[in-house]
Image (tube, rainbow, N blue to C red; front, side):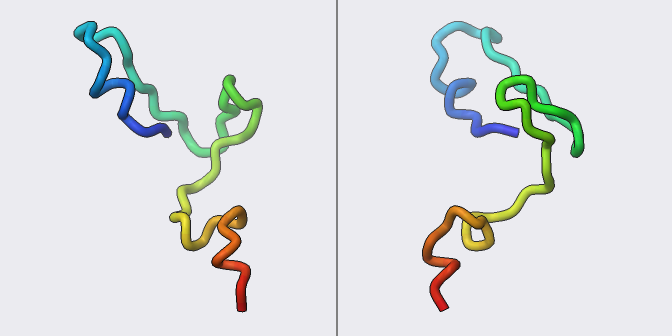
Length: 52
């Protein structure tokens, strides 16, 4: 669901935990449903993928 940068750099042991959200569940941070993963080359916000 997220990158693990914060987990790796936090100086407090076991301070941050990550929870995987199942597909279709609403992410409480964004209010959006969790969708399947797509890589950046397929992402609609990648302007390079819209060039043709």
